Image (cartoon, rainbow, N blue to C red):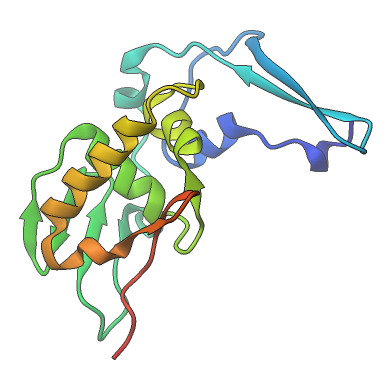
Length: 167
């Protein structure tokens, strides 16, 4: 298999400031054939101690804040401080609410289904828990107030983050 066809989620987590310790060999969580390609999708998981993220180095300054462009309503996520601010006011978010908002806003316009969100934010890879995502999105929208419209429901698919439109 060529390296260009491999998506390394451990490397993606590393780019987000999470430096795993010794990963070992990992465990195969699932293998799914990809029709008409002669290839399979192999999902490998690693058990990482809970305290590892606390030991991770601080992300580079460019990745620390996601800020609205000039002229847009201000919604700022500060990853290093794990703080969300709307129009200069801090929004109190739970750990999962912050992770969900951070994950959705890291790729504006990209639609994620509930299973993808469960895997990324809750580290669960089963079909259970779709309602958990819905409830967290509802709570997050309530806390975002007038910025709630940035989390858009895509019917029969999932959710996406939509930056505010310029007026």
